Image 1 (cartoon, helix red, strand yellow):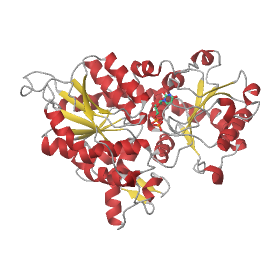
Image 2 (cartoon, helix red, strand yellow):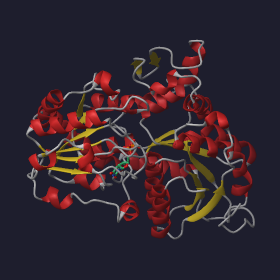
Image 3 (tube, helix red, strand yellow):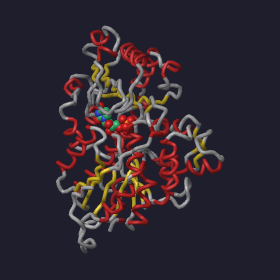
Image 4 (cartoon, helix red, strand yellow):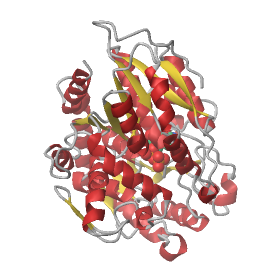
Length: 476
Ligand code: UDP
């Protein structure tokens, strides 16, 4: 096992900055908040930072991402972590990222000696929720270090996760078997939480359950959200309504993207900014469904026809395969014959990676039609862009959509699903709703207000800024 940092020679020198060890998980939706939080801390220079990098590499996109982060912040140390081979026939056919989480979890006991040898001596660990139940015991029992969780989703989802074991015990079951009333959050119909939790044998369900049980043992929960966006959920967690004795909650968002993300995608990236520059203010509908969410061909055709019929200008990022950024299908193979010609000038369709934050920040963008990944929602909120929520059902996206709805900066049509033929969303309805939200003054005004609140939150004296200072104070 390679250790890039020099072995420890003793305790942290008096007056030396705290040394934070980050243990990220896998998947760009998990990596982005980590690199954004790390970059924010590294720019302040208040802490020493090491990042544990799991080997072998899971995807080129992630490897490039970390390479760019280390290049931009040479003071950040890298600790290589060789994973044990995952030799388990029962896991055949499992999603590669879920497998990666399992692999990290099964290798977590090796982190003890690795981190014990870090220099300067570690002050605390920050890890991902997918690893919580394995890393928290290593940190606390073996290394005697505080362990914080940097959560990648919203406070509402954190509340659900933390409450899930109580629900399961009370309902005498081992999976999501009905509606859930989360104290302080409210009634969640059975189809809001991740639907995969209905299957007790699914690896995700097992991981989710044990991470939920362990979460109360963490020393702090860092959330990429802000008080004005999720006031009720944050209060419920902080007041111990969801789970009594819940760890301190630090809402430090919205986390800003870093220049390293752009460097990491350089080459494969497409830049629609020049095209956006030519469009009138607030005239363009941005349509994108995340990194790993491939739509069925038939749904892609309906989306295209809907955008065409809406009469609006649009920028549409099309994904057809479920692999981070590695999409081999040609646009002409997936779009209707003649579509690109018909929408030429008012519609731009791309399949490459885009700098999404730059798109959302652009004054020409007036609406974001989204799958409701939390990073995307915080980016849209921060940029004051209204949303048309079209959440996936497998993960946290429907709970995320509840945040858009309660914060009032978008529309969520609950019957819009991604469950293939049975519930195809037709072009006429897409066109109608796109036009409706584009013309909705109240939603637009609320989105601008949310954007202003986001800016205020991270400015000196703002709620997220203060939360960050409070978190740093715990490390001293
Ligand atoms: N993203 C991007 N360009 C793309 C696709 C995605 O910059 O072409 C970024 C997006 O800005 C966000 C992240 O990738 O920060 C996606 O995370 P999210 O939680 O929204 O969704 P996921 O893809 O993980 O479901």
